[in-house]
Image: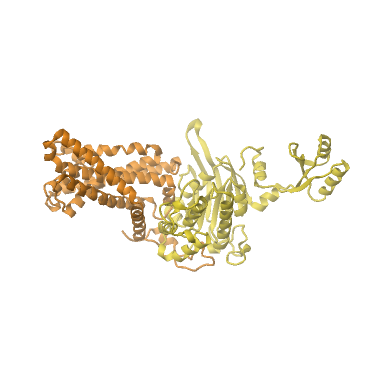
Length: 349
Length: 286
C-alpha cells in the first residue's frame, strides 16, 4: 500500500507556489484524510479537580495540507497532538491515520507518522547529526543505507551538511531544532506533527526554521500539523488554522478566510490634535475601534474601508486635525482569536 | 531475530519522500529487526567508545570501594578474611555486574523519558519494547566488559586465583543478572510514572548485596529470589571450578527459570506502567 503524499493537493495550499518541484498542485485529494479525529475527549484528574484538556474535538487534515493549531497555553494543543499520536490515550473518540483506525493497529497506523514535541530534545545529543538521521530512519522502519542520499539532501537543505559529523550537543539551539526536524523527516514520514517548533529560538533561527518548513511542505508534499501559540509561525507556515480554547475548536478555516472574515479595514491615525472633542466627533460618525491616548502623538483606530476613508480624512480636516501618521491596520490571527472566543485580551494565543 | 515489522512492510512501498524534491527518486527499503538491532547496538557502542569517562569512572569508583572493603576487612578480620577472599571477589564481581545492568537500564529509561525519545519510539513501527530489550542486552555486554576489568584488578591486587572458564562464567553470571535486568525494567517503568522516584530506586542496588550473600543452602526458598541462586552457582563455578555442564540439570533449569521469570515480569511491569502513563498523560512529563 503506497500512501502517496505526492498526490496530495487536497489541502488549501497552492502547491505550485514555488513553481518548480511540487507535483500536487492540481491533483485532487485521493483516499482518506491523513488524519481524521472524531469526538476526541481527554480529561485529567478526577472529581472537582478534573480538567477537560480536549473536549469533543473533531477535525480532518487532508493530505498535503499544512494545518496550524493555535491557542494559548492550556488550550489543549499538545494534548490533542499527543492523543492523535497515541502518546496519550483519549477517554473518548477515534483517531484515523491515513484511513486506519489506530485502535485496529497502532503501529501500522503510525508507520508514516513522526513528531517533534515541545520541550523535548527528540534526538540523541551524544550522537552526530548524521548518526541521528540513520538511527531514527531505522526505528521509523526504513533501512538507513537505502535513504543515505536523501539524508544528504536533507542535511544540505537544512544547512546542516557542514555539521553532519558533529555531535548534536555541540550545536546551537537553532541548529539542534533543525536536527530534530531532520530526524523527524529522516524516515520519510508523510504526516508530521510539530509542537511549538520555534519555541525558545531567537528571531533569526525562528525565521529560518519557518522558511524551511514552508519550503519542505511545498516541495515534498508533506502533511504537517503545527501547534503554536506564536501567530507568526502559524501565519507563515499554515494554509489552515484550527483555533482551540479550553479544549474546544472555536475556529477552523483557511488563514485567508479567517482574516477576511475578521472583516474590518481599519486605519490608525495619529495626531497631537486628537483631543477629547475630536474623538467624540469621530465616535459619532465612525466606528472607532480603539483609542490610544497614551501614545505620542495620541492615536485612534477607525474602521474605515473603501470610501469611508475619504469621509474620515474630510472629517479630520474639518476638525482642524493635522495628521502625523496614517497606517492601515490589518486584523491578525490574535484579533480573530479574541473575536471568536469573546476574550478581551489577557494571554495572547 | 529477523523480519520486518508488519507496519513497515505495509507502508514502505513508496517513493523518496520528504526533501527528495520531485519524486520518486530513491528506493527506500524496509528496516528489519536486524537493522533495528544493528542501530541500537551501534548507538550503544558509539556512546561507550566516544565517552569512555563514564565507564572509566565507574571502574575507578568500584575499585576504590573494593579497596576500602579489602583493606578494612584485613584490618578487622585478618586471617579470616584471607580464607574467604575468593568468595568476596566473586561476590563483588557479581555485584558490579548487577549494579551495572540494573542502574544502566533503569536510568536509561528515565533519560529517554526526559529527552522525549521514548515518546518518539512509541509511535514507530517497532515500538519501544524491542529497543528497550536490545538496549538491555547492550548494557549487559558493556557491564561485562567493565566488570571484567574490575575482576582482573581484584585478582591481581589480592593475589587470588579463580576458575575463569569463559563459557561457564558468562552463562551463569549472565543468567544471574538477567533477573536484575528485569528489576531494572520494572524500576524504569515506575520512573516513567513517578519521575522523581528514580534516584530512590537506585538505592535498591545495595539490596543486591543481601541477595548475593543469601544462604541458599540453609534457606532453599530463597533460590527463587533474584541473584541468590545464580550467586551460589557462580561461587561454585569460579571458586570450585565447576563447569556449566557439571551442574545438576535442576540447578540450571532454576537458573534459567528465575532469569526468564524476572526478566519477563519486569518487562511486563514496564509495559503496564507505560500504558498507565499514556492514560494519565504523563509519559513525557518531566
